[in-house]
Length: 280
Image (cartoon, rainbow, N blue to C red; front, side, top):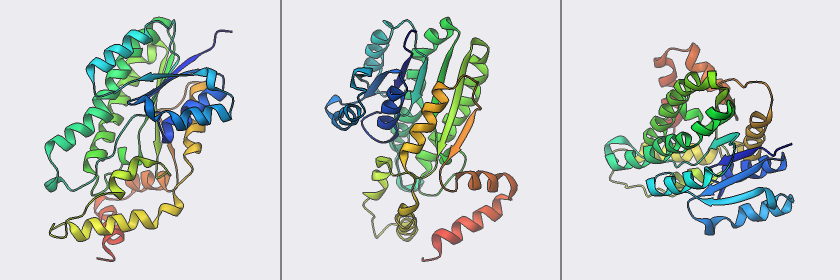
């Protein structure tokens, strides 16, 4: 049998690194991309531990760079088929709208939305010609729920959700599935930008942001194992039956989504603000 090929973006750490290894363990050839190949050490070490090094092929890719996308597109064209794309590359920008620049939002969208679309457009012709393929977009609970202090990240994930809904309807008839995996809080480094924020005591939002950071830090012990997400992605990538659109995963994620469905916004608003500001 011909070995299937998967592309995974953002594999230097976190979900991306674990997805690359888990897919290789499942027998797929993995095109593992990252912005800086000198960051590949942890991935290569993990791949060696599981004896799947020969199935992981490193490619440099900056999803925000058009020249980098073009180079990647040229290298991908040599493959007869691309069976799976895991759009994982992303960043999280924290802060309050009044104190952020429009460029902060642009960078967030360049990475989490436009870069993802660019990579997706690279594989779509190949998948369409083969009448098969699976595109797995790593979203977030923030794609359904707008938390304060995270409007750049939240809005980018909401955009990803809308894009994925439309894309799924566009390509379903060509045998291509589009899936959203929606993790909650996991022990990955994407939140390092929040943890390392320098708070200005003169900011009118200082106490608010402190309360948010305290809440995040207090809940770190409940953050899930990112391997669970990688295993879910691998199951979705390899199962024969057509997957659903959305797969929420993580502590409290389904509850948040349910509450937003059944409770009036004013009630949710009161619950969130009371939780975040109770120490204020």
